[in-house]
Image (tube, rainbow, N blue to C red; front, top):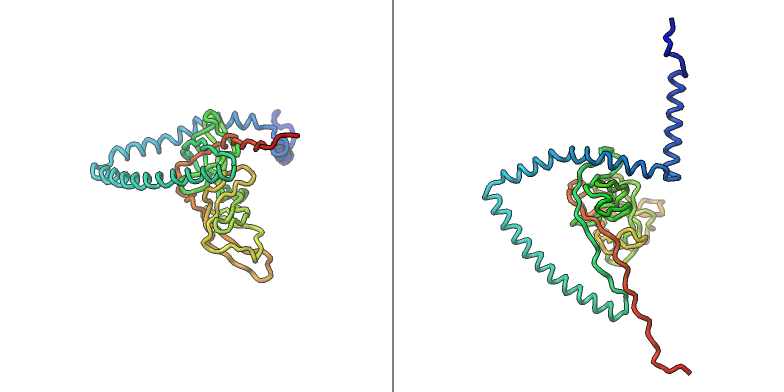
Length: 288
């Protein structure tokens, strides 16, 4: 006797329909951004679970800090005082350079640039997919985070924000295979695109001809082109320049300055305010 509820399409047909429906939803999302609001809602819905998963590490860090010996605290304080002294010295030199830069801008009639708004964020989770280099941070739309926002740390460029929830955001690292950043060589201002290689310790320069003046040891900085990353932030150092016989392009590899496998705190940047344009010079001659 056949069961009453056993009727309906066979299992392969249902599986095929489910796969086709999934493909249609993915195409609709990638082409027409049909589920942007739904993804924002899901990110906001999952963020409490991410905070809960992150809470044991926060408690352990707090407990380990409280259990530090008095001697370790004294040594830490002494080391931090020395570092603070060096940072104050660097600050004095930076102030001098800022004043000199301001005088040069006034001399050249260039627009005045203002300080960029910044915010510190902490990494809450790391993507477990070995083919995707992404992390989740503890800042979201409530703090003004937006998609495409540049992310750095104290060593250099780290990546950019790709999706935003209310209290968390996802950051794509510069080493991801889908990421690229416009850079320039600090030595001679040659411009190129540094692409992710899929390894946390390597970037590559694509489509660089053999006669391009790029050498091992060159420092690469963000060029500011495309308006995504501010100009002048360190990206990496050229560690390999090779040429294969018969290949028109060089094999150039870069090691990022930011240690992406050990990063914990990140710095979010906001676009600079609109610059003040210099006033047009007025003619001293009387009009006829």
